[in-house]
Amino acid sequence: MMLGAMDFLTFQDYGYELSILFRLLLAVLLGGLVGMEREMHGRPAGFRTHLLVTVGACLMSVVSEHYYLKYPALDSSSAVRFDPSRIAAQIVSGIGFLGAGVIIKEGLAVRGLTTAACLWLAAGIGMAVGCGLYLAAVFTTIIALTSLLVLKRLERFFKKDRYRTLTIYAEAGTLNREAVEQVLHAHGLRIADYGFEQNREANEVRYDLVVRHPDEVSSEDWIRKFADLDQVSRVRFR
Image 1 (cartoon, rainbow, N blue to C red):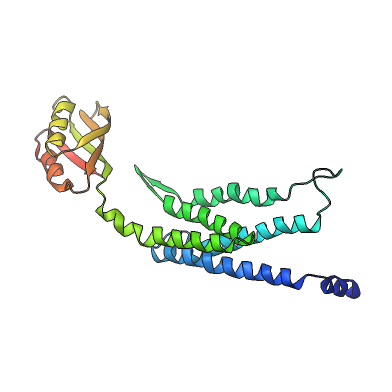
Image 2: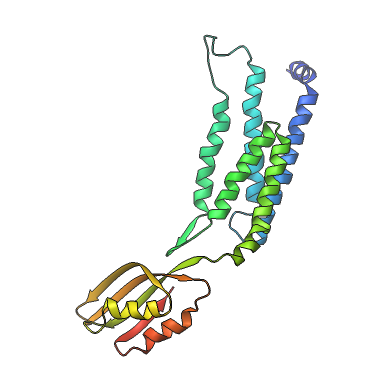
């Protein structure tokens, strides 16, 4: 058994083995760089997660490639057929479970989409390294870091709308939707969605409004307008 193992090691292509080690180390470096940025921003999937995803994807791509090298005779014309590329193909679908785990929905806000995209990208970087596409993997990592570090600062200069939920409690029959819209329109706000609930026992109506407003609009002024109305008992904004 010992001689058999030594014979097996003797006939290995050490150049190919060293290239695999290089691929794994490069995957560690590139995945760690992307994960470090997420770690610095306190995201749930940080340095170690991105590093492991990239290395794991790299290893599975190497295994997929190795099957082609080990069984070159089993092509489409042979009696026994298999498709090693399916090993790497399952990485793309399998990474979706990790991505779904970091996405959190809080009301109308959805957090974790960027981190989920980073995990998906880290898997792609690992696959590229595993297939020997080093330049593409490095360039993709540079693009990812530029997007996360530089473009995030540029987003502050973009004018964009935000969606928040405004909840108003008022005595039944004393406040209608038109009165609410007048206050909102006076501050340049628009209602994206609308709903209400009436409590007969408390003789109270609750209005749930999904409000669209620009970044530069201060919420304190128009919330105070609603709070000052005699018909309104409570106002909640989230």
